[in-house]
Image (spheres, one colour):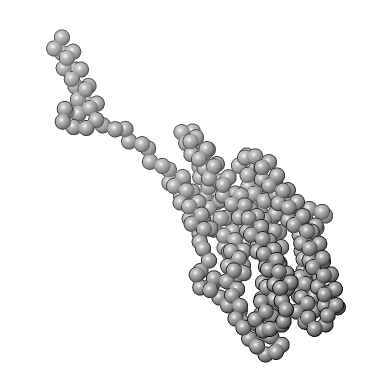
Length: 286
């Protein structure tokens, strides 16, 4: 009996220690290095992906020179900021993403070779799937932001035009400034739309590579393509209507030179918009 009591006491002491010590806790196995590397690369991408445009960029101005010789400074930080994000997304972000995707793929393959690492396969699949569509989603939203900015500049131009009573340097700079901003944003909008559509396609390929469904991504791509074509078509119609009105006003009274200036501006913007629409209509049509 004493022997049995001694054994019970020994087992209790081994499990819980002496009366004054804390219970022993089981140590969780350390995460494999290939898993930690994949997660670190993923976080590095998102950190870089979220970097804001430099403050100095937002404060930039452009010198507008008028035919009269007058020069005025125009704030262009809004346009430069959008151009910065577009360039960063289509070049540098893609490079950083490739590194993160590669690390996740290597981790998935390593996990598959270890039967006890099933939980890591699931976690890495989630990480990889989010990375796979990250650039497409961002390009989609950024293209829409640029579209809305162009619309706002166009609306401000037309509202100002209706309110002008006499031509002056400040008013001319406003019209020239909005025109230049729209003219610079139109090709960026097209480039982003094309990039987003191609990224959606690449996202689909990435997901299929690891056996994940790409149905949602393909639906997003089709919706985006339909939306951007519709928006580009609507803009063309809007610009055609505005140009016809400006031509009529300019012909009614030659002294209202600001309408003649608007005709020149909107003639160019309409041409660029039509070119964008043609390029968008070519996608997937061949």
